[in-house]
Length: 116
Image (cartoon, rainbow, N blue to C red; front, side):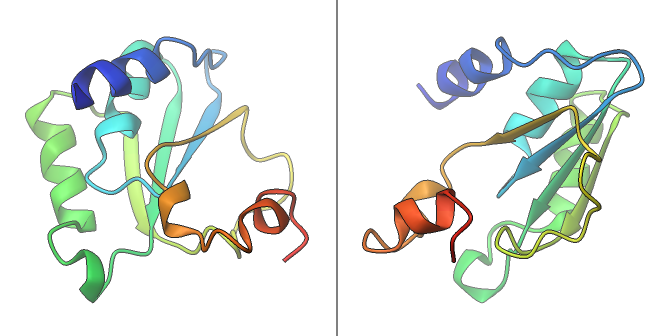
């Protein structure tokens, strides 16, 4: 089912040739990789905070998964979804999957609206 969700989300992402996509909370890189496969002339950057509570996920895992899928238009880095380290208008598309359950429910709307 997870593959169906990932492929389903990726099927909607259209990035212009030479464009960029940011995948926020990329985890193992699955969505980043699926989007990169579909948009082979674009760059997909996956960020995640990884860390001890998500010890099974890492930048190395994402890079290994991308290589195993034969995808070369991805890159991965540690980052904070609440403090993105990119200038405005860097990306043509932004994706995220399975991140929202990590946002405390009382703060969810404010965070998603950029008020926190």
